[in-house]
Structure formats: structure tokens, C-alpha cells
Amino acid sequence: MTARVLDGNAVARAIREEVAPGVAAFTATAGRPPGLGIVLVGDDPASHVYVRNKIRAGMEAGMFVDLQQLPATATLDDVLGAWAGLGYYSRARNLHACARAVVERHGGRFPPDEAALRTLPGIGAYTAAAITAIAFGRRAVVVDGNVERIITRYHTIDTPPPAARAAIRAAADRLTPRHRPGDFAQAMMDLGATICTPRSPACPRCPLAEGCAGRLSGDPARWPVKARKPAKPERRGLAFVVHDATGRLLARTRAEKGLLGGMTEVPGSAWADAPPPDPETVAPLVARWRSCGGITHVFTHFRLELTVMTAVVPAGTFPPDGMRWLDPDAVAGAALPNVMRKVLARATG
Image (tube, rainbow, N blue to C red; front, side, top):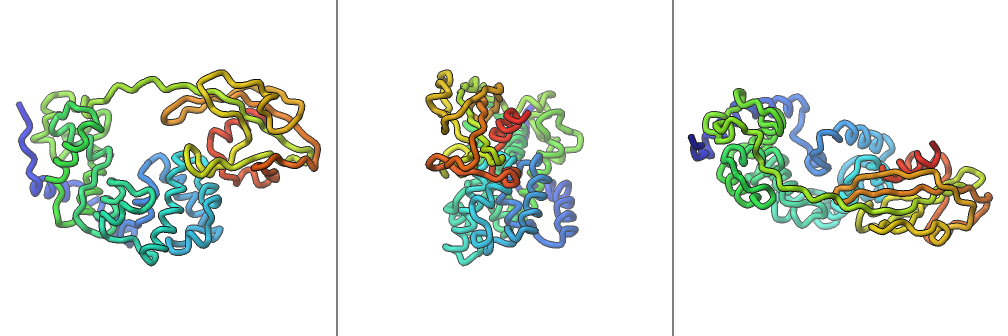
């Protein structure tokens, strides 16, 4: 048996009838339409509670009051500090840059045009479409991982994303209605998150089950087809944890562009695929260095192993160029990424 061709109006009606009422009820309960900030900040469910708590703390401190005030009330360091621990730090940098751009170019209001949205820092095709449909109620084709999974299963597309992305978007375009496109987009995403899940999809509950080729195959979880992932390369390096006699920590700020851009770190060697250099040749200060073991941290594209070196230097020691001392009570609130917090835990453990 094969799947029938999806009829956009019929699917839109089924989605709205089966899934969208829950979205509408949630919106009514909240008392306001979905916020731009929720669409913009990110869509990782594991981070939602943590993000909400971080933003609440920032608001209590006078930051993140609203889009217009964000650039004036919060520096990039403030935003990175509030974001510390979440990962994907480019989102925090883009959030700050986007707020500045909206204030400077658009008078503090997001443009309701999808093309104009894509010119803003950090806003790609998915986010621009989501803002257009959900926040402004204008038709836009919203395709996230959930929508990709629904489309590839319905049509049993055997090409792995992202190679199949154009075909998936074209299929999603045929489905997207002009009426209530925001509800439709959220309902499709909720359908993928709660029914057409990555594992053990609940096909009997799905409003699209009748014509779904994935369901008819008997093994819908086969789709989307996953591309074979290459092994992550490994990099190695040294991390130097230096305290002075008063307990201050030697730190520096990474370059604004690139991995962990603008974040705070302890000094260290370059991260390379070769064994780390002799600590004495790259240490930030002359001191009696002691190795206290290593840590491992997995980034998206590589695996990092750092050997942690520690030392204590006299009070009054001047920091090297580009570095600074952090008072003990400032370390907890510093914009330290998880890899650096692992380093400090190893050094003090």
C-alpha cells in the first residue's frame, strides 16, 4: 500500500481540530499571544525551565526588561553570564546583537516581514518563519525537526536530512494554510513532539495516520533516515587554574567570534589534535605548577581533553596582558562555559 497525496486544506483542518485547540487553550490561559522572546531564544525543551529561571533572575536584576531596554540595561557580558551553563553561546551573542539591531534599525519593533527578519543577527529560515507565523499571524512555512519527522514519515522519504530539506519544505509549503498559520505551525510542532515522536510514535492517536506511508510500512520509526555520523575528532590542551594568595582567580575573555566567543575562561594552551605542550613553555605566569588530572568535554564537532594545572601566586601579582583577576565572590556569576566549570571543579576537587 502507498500513501495518498496530502491535501493541504484537509490536513490543516485535521491538525487544527485535533491538536490546535490545545495550543489555543494554552494561549488563552497565558492571557497573551506567544511572545517574540520565546520564539527567538530557542526551542530546546530541556532548557526551557532553566532559561525561564535565568530570564527571571535577569529581570529581577534590572536586565531583560524588554527588547527596547535590553541593549541599554545589559552588556554582552551580562547576557553571557545569565546564559552560562546552557551551551550554544552563539545564541546569547546573537540575542544581544539582535536586540541592538531591532532598536537601531526598526525603532524597537520586530519587522513583520519574513525577509526582513532574516537580516537580523541569529535569525535563520526557521526562526524567521516561526516569528512571522506565530507572532504576526502571517503565512510562513515553519519547518523544525518535528515537522521534518512528520513529512518524511508520511511520504517515507529515504533521503536523510539535510539533503532532503528542499523536498520536505516543498511538502510543508503545500500544507500550510493562510488561515491561522501560527496555530497550524505550533500544532504541527506539537504533533511531532507528542505523537509522531522519534521513538514509539503513537500512530493510533495521529490525525494523519490514515494515509501515512510510514505507518502503513509497520515501522514508522525508520524515518527520518539518519545519515552516518563521522567519528568526532579529538583535541587536547592545557588549562591553567591560578589563584593568588587572596583567593582571586586568573581569567581572560575569549575572542568574541568563534567557539565560546565572548565567554570567560582560565588561561590555557591552544586546543590541537597533537599532544599538549610542556606546561612551562605556555604557562601564563612563572609558578610552581601541579597537575591535578584532566577533564573531557564533548562539543558538537569535536571531543576535548584538557589537562588541568594549578598554582598559587603571591598577592599583588600583576595579571599578564589580556587577563584579569576575578574576586572569589564573582566567579559564580562569571560567564564561564560548562567546560571551564569542569576545569575549576577538577582543580578544587
